[in-house]
Image (cartoon, rainbow, N blue to C red; front, top):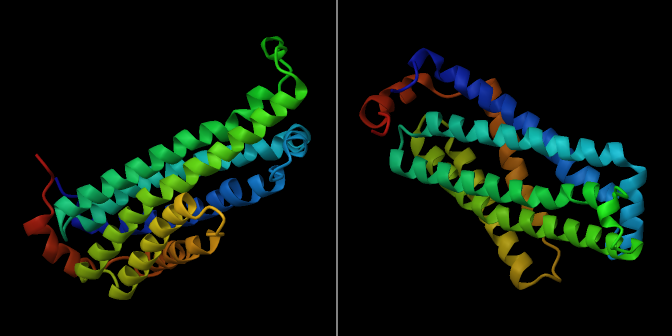
Length: 241
């Protein structure tokens, strides 16, 4: 069944709020907290930062959990908002976003692993302090690899979202273009990381972050053109059976 048409703006507003919460939580959990804890190439310093800043470390992980919960909910919101345009493509977007969220969730296990490695539990006594420090930095590096890989799935999903927005007529076409560009940059970021690891690729994430922020503001301020969404929904908006 399709959602009640009178409620479609509610879905749009919820999506806008979720985007903003996800941006703030993700910025802290993926950006700020790791930057304060990880000392690239210095295992001892990294371990020391985690031990002395345990609260920051755990709040960073909790922030990721908030981001992940928002991403899962946003996938459902995208399905509701965009399936009147092309239901098959919208399902493909959902699958790619689920893959992205699952890949990053797995990567986050490596972020959390140092909280187990640095506990001084008796079963860890077979490792020296230097070995535990090295395993800690290795685990965090694996977290970074997983995060970079997840961007490819997010990027493909974002390209699909942008294309659907461009075709929708009830969301701005320019926003769709921005999302396609942002998604392509995410995919490029992953392949740059894999093929040319020496080249900094962080700037490639900026277009998608901008796209998310712009869509969040639009959904909160304007929402969707309800009349055009309603016109599209009857013919293409049926649930999959």
